[in-house]
Image 1: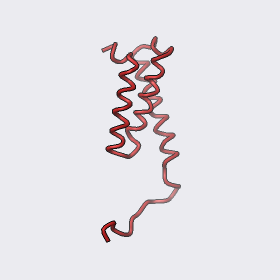
Image 2: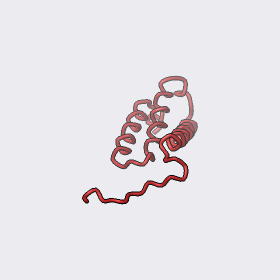
Image 3: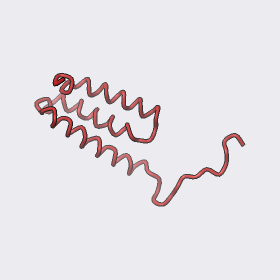
Length: 91
């Protein structure tokens, strides 16, 4: 199990799976986790390979949260605006 968590390509493959899942179920939920997993995968190529498993998971959680908050701010509707639809696409 230790080898799986500290292997860089596993994190990048997980990021790809989460990004594909985000395409299938849009909502910017899985995309934050995908960005966090990709960042951890790239960090494991360098100095982060010496970190322990709990520290790697903590870095993943922190980077995922930061990515989600940034994307929420960038892609959110303007304040107070609600998206409503008055007509049906089939009309």
